Length: 139
Image 1: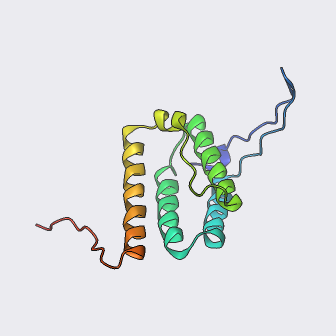
Image 2: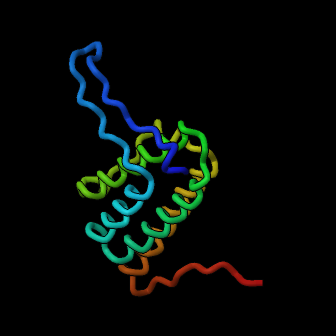
């Protein structure tokens, strides 16, 4: 993802149903990345922050060389929306939008499942004194 090739959101003028609120301008990748990490530091507990930071770092690393402007705008838009949700703290307990899940690739669904499993493992470890974490057998 090259900061020099970033497409910025352009406010729409008058829509068919009257005046529209202009969409927020997209932050460039590095400021957005820093904003997300700051939001984690301010709004998440230590374990959620650790998990979230690892995930954000891996995702930004994985998309660093993306050249397709549509993918870049989509990536930045979703992460900016995520940062706003974390900062607003109204995301807890919220379910994912079914249309977004339907658009996910098999790899993305697998990542979401792994993330869900990691969250459940941590919650069980914190709340159940008799819980023993599942470890795969070593060969």
